[in-house]
Length: 434
Image (tube, rainbow, N blue to C red; front, side, top):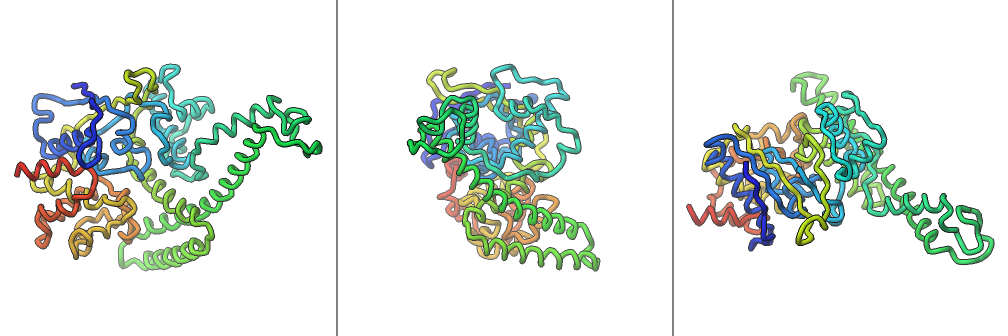
């Protein structure tokens, strides 16, 4: 076991943290089984800035990257120590139902293993599950994510705090009115600053609930379509029942698309797409994100506990003894630039392959059954599969299919295609050594 620290916190020429470059070099060697476990099991503890972990151990598929996918192929990563939420900045979060369901799974595992978090080191989600006495049963833990898609907002706690203060009588609606009284303002006086802020936040939450209610209906319809898709996939192609299910599925997809087109709010459409893919990633077996596969919650640390005052976290990186996706040298060399080229934009779907090499979609997709298998995280139509939902199995299959494709561009051309992608410094260094 080795304990390492990414210090000083430098940025590579590509604009990416040195932490990411170092991890990519490690995963390259692990894929080729060079050095790791040669003299016994290897385990690495890495101290690094909290902001660097966004792409290493993402908590939403929006922040998945080549770094996280490379680690998923070769390692299991746990966060042992994490920084407080202020150190994470304004990162986009999943809907609260997924966060709570993920926390319930971990809470139940920790309870069975008799693992507890010391007082003062709990995460906010852990505190919430603990305080509410949520002891999820096995059948509750395994259910899919079907809660209300209300994303966590920074002002939710402020709203709750102001409501509690108003009920306690700490401030009045307006001057001359009794504290805690929401009656009509007959004095004509201006609202107090506290009540004006409370009223503004209550209007916000009312609007959010109305919007998320519409999004939730669309998501429920999508979940039913996905269930039909999985059912049809498990039936033989010649089965008349499969054809009937596929016809019903297409009709429901058309109705859903019409509802989306008729929606006046662009935000509702964006939220639908975002939450749809987040739920599919969470319902995947195992969950797509390593964060949702954690065995215990991290211990909370605070910026003032480090010198200089940086939000740091401790990662436990455990390379697999027998990598489930072993690669040859040629496959490992292709993996990095191929995934970089695909990941230039996380919202682009798998058809981006044709931009890398014309005809790649028709040549490679049939060679990777997982891409079109709903039970393995795929989509019947690969245009519906964003790059951010690529599983390790899919990435491994695409790499092998690319190496076996006789009309593929050479490695130099592939690297040029990925020259504007993230974390390509290590790829350039390896090319110079070839």
